[in-house]
Image (cartoon, rainbow, N blue to C red):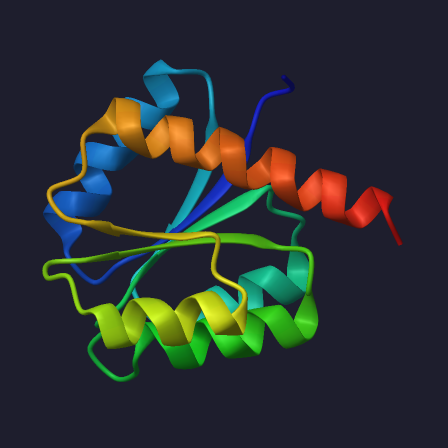
Length: 129
């Protein structure tokens, strides 16, 4: 699999810094932002293979950012993360096009496995059009 280009959207700097280190160690290219607005702007400007998106951001909800991203790029693979599991949020986000929903703290191996699955699924879906 080619080197993944990942966008991480989270307002917890410790989470971003830790994830940045771990992704770079695994030869992944990653951009990191702390707001939904920045994330949407980057999706307009760059091609990402997968987005890791926090459900709760300071000025917006992750599901609103997800919706905006999917309008821009319907094929974009998005994995949501949250400090708590909420089945209602999970169901709504799946309906909006999220690939999966993981609860923090996320084991890096599990996250990478989900990222690879999401990218594969998005590529297969794009190939069917």
